[in-house]
Image 1: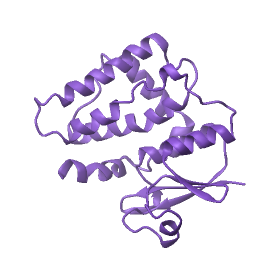
Image 2 (image 1 turned 135 degrees about the vertical axis):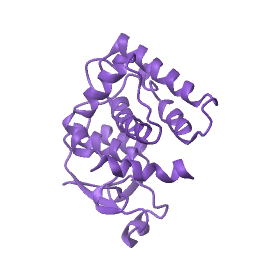
Image 3 (image 1 turned 90 degrees about the vertical axis):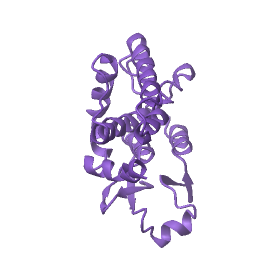
Image 4 (image 1 turned 180 degrees about the horizontal axis):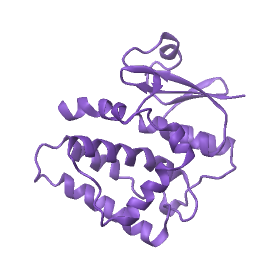
Amino acid sequence: MALEVAVKAAVGAPTLLGDCPFSQRVLLTLEEKKIPYKLHLIDLSNKPEWFLSVNPEGKVPVALFDGKWVADSDIIVGILQEKHPEPSLITPPEFSSVGSKIFGCFVSFLKSKDPNDGTEQALLAELTALDEHLKGHGPFVAGEKVTAVDLSLAPKLYHLVVVLGHFKKWSIPESLAHVHNYTQLLFSRESFEKTKPAKEEFVIAGWAPKVNG
């Protein structure tokens, strides 16, 4: 029986996979665990009635477990690990928060209009900390095997690379070689290829209102 999961459709292309990093995290987990699933693409600007009736908040991602739609990628990923323990994607507790501030720093820097407000430095500090961690523990956060923390970071780093490259002409410094190696390893995984947004333009379109707002 395939698991039903509802995720964001692409902006302006409701039949294609969209750019929500939290939706992709859930899909990555399903792919890495080889769990069959049925995808519902939700156009967030025109949410279908059935979706709002089962999920009044209208948020994505949501997944159907035992007849009940469950929201929040953290909770969904936790349930998937519980119901499908193998292969285990559990991150050792001491590594579970590695890189957790990168996404927030990326958003602050993206929205920033002042080059001296410290947002770029804050992002660089977080990426440097990740580089140091990978240097000692890599190639993935917990060593040789992909775990949940990598599947959470991968879509966020993809958005960072695409969006900062487009709007700020900014890229991760070459000196952070371990981070570069890490992103290449993650982005080239079959699970990532299958679950990433259909086109980079959709990622850019998804972020445009936040940049121009």
